[in-house]
Amino acid sequence: MKKIVMFVAGLALVASVASAETGGTPGTTGKQNKPKSTQSASKGTAKSVTAKVVSVDAAAKTIALDIDGQQTTVALTGKALTEAAGFKAGDEVHVTLHDSANGVHKSISAIKPVKNKKK
Image 1 (tube, rainbow, N blue to C red):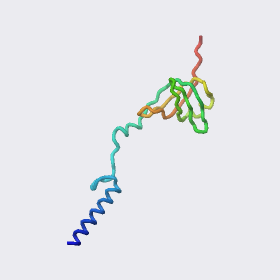
Image 2: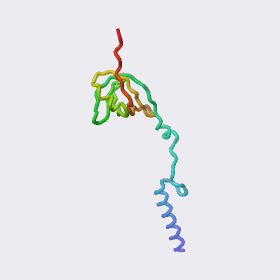
Image 3: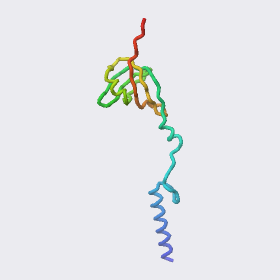
């Protein structure tokens, strides 16, 4: 009888350790599917916006912009890394802004000056 109790206790211990390692209940593979909402979160949007340059930090590869009265700092990628070097605070620019699925500004891939309007 004592051997049976020890055997069952050992099995329970092994099952609890295995469950903790896989992150699930006994009998699961440990692989967990991501919810569909986080799988689609990697898809963002790109849009063209007009903004005013607040500052450019070439070392950090970022640019601070005033977009519709809201200041934001965004990473520079692609062509924008070299294009941003020609701008200074106060310049008006058109940027290709990439947002995450939840609307957070992630990066800028292109930046061009706003052409002066003729009077």
